[in-house]
Image: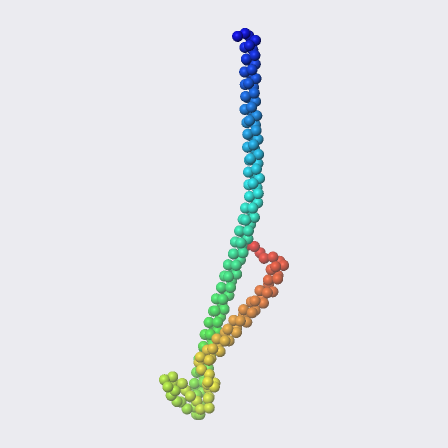
Length: 182
């Protein structure tokens, strides 16, 4: 082969090599650019998802705060119920003591009263009086107990009504001022 032919072959080989190198470099550049675009798309999706996650976290925190507030309210109501029960028990004890004193006083009055005739009333041992001295007409221990229970229930209802009025007055104030978050 002649020198000119070798030169032409060498030029063709160099041109082919340059074309291959250029294609490889351009291919890498395109692939790198595509990877950059894909990475940016993923970052944008992550930002969008992050906003959604933050909103959900805020909702969860709000729900937890409401649950804590409801639990605190339930605890307060339980404490109030316990206090009301203790008050009712104390009043019942006081009423029983007062009843015992009144019964003892009536028994002494019956002992002193010459018009009272002691009669056996079956196995109960009740003292019957002429003309109905110390026992109210037909009033039994069960009826007195029912009256005491009714009085206690009335007292409880007054307390509950008072608490409800306080809550009704408090509720508008809470809405205008906002409730504190725990």
